[in-house]
Image 1 (cartoon, rainbow, N blue to C red):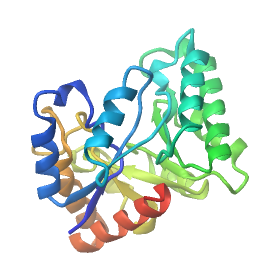
Image 2 (image 1 turned 135 degrees about the vertical axis):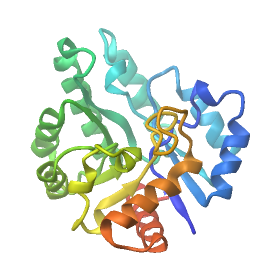
Image 3 (image 1 turned 90 degrees about the vertical axis):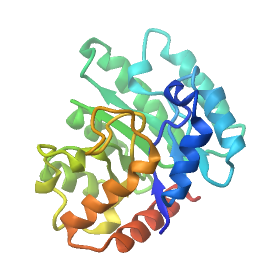
Length: 255
């Protein structure tokens, strides 16, 4: 079985002491491909070092996380743009809008996302979108910019069926992670009936561990738990879910 973790911060400080062992556990669990989202200038070096050490399994994105959008976000975006012009990346991301912590930065976040949408078009790369308490704000910007060339994923999707259908209508994928295993996560009301071709699997590690590890550090080796839950909700077998979501990831990120 070949699983793809389409969103994993395996370069995180939380894995500093056991990164190699953690990645080995992932490979042994069937997670053969890991796509790594960038956060900001502070995460680039360790992310690229992780990719260098595991070039056949780990693939880097380049972008600016909305929670890192501050007064000097233009400088951060200049670095993102510079890197995108220097070498290949799997995607622009993660980017998007997050209104959970600070709503006052919304105008900056919107402008940062517009810039990264333009960079995705320029470099013909998918967008990996972070949306927290900001689905409508994010979707509106994507809808305005969608000219048939934009593609990507709303990562860590935990919205309604109507929002899922909106994402699909925009030509984007749904990133499904540990929330699918939560008793009150809500995805049991969303996923049944959706076509597998619209889904990607992810951990968002070290965050959002699936049951029974909820509340503990997440890692890619737990992705089979997400795959199993998705298979259960869709009435598919595990191998079909693994094969379809890996194929979708390979096509989207051109791995």
